[in-house]
Length: 277
Image (cartoon, rainbow, N blue to C red):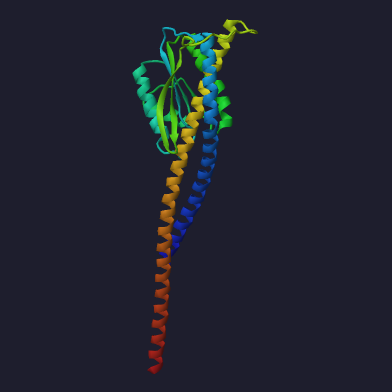
């Protein structure tokens, strides 16, 4: 009876945990589809802005200072090795670049970077959905541009995950700054309602924001894909454990029933013997 009660409690705990994992999987699947569907329009827009910036001859030159690094990680857990792989790649890149300011998006990734002896100058809460990207983007972009200009930095790189499928992501470094437009391959359009310098400044700023938005969106898609794969694996494991416990519980109940029948039969035989005497 005691074993039966213990197995019942364990089965109830696993079923409760399974409900929580199933809810997390559904939420991850929803956010994954949302971010994946937004990726292609974001890339198309950035490519269009890039062509405009190149046509205007826009540039944001380099200084002679250090190279900054922005690491884009995750805010939430239950996404397998996503944060650890990003933190390890970020630490390796920071040590390769030498001293310089390091920013990080995602509190969990920031904690792991600190364990890799990377000193962070700024840390930001990572977006958990596409609607939260804009607010994070504005804060991070403002701080990056301010640091780049005020410290006359020679570059600013972004290390983030590129989405390659559900559960598949690859840490990738993007050289965001400096920016120098490639020579135009065709005729340069004439700006009718804005000075060329003003148009170039707006174009390079818009390109910076569009690239940052795409990187954050790509990282978010990779994160939700990793979380979806992790919750699917957890759900399979829980299903296997639950089925095994159910079998053990059924066996324990059969054993208890058999023992009860045997005890009843033994008692009946004992009463029969007592009556014969």
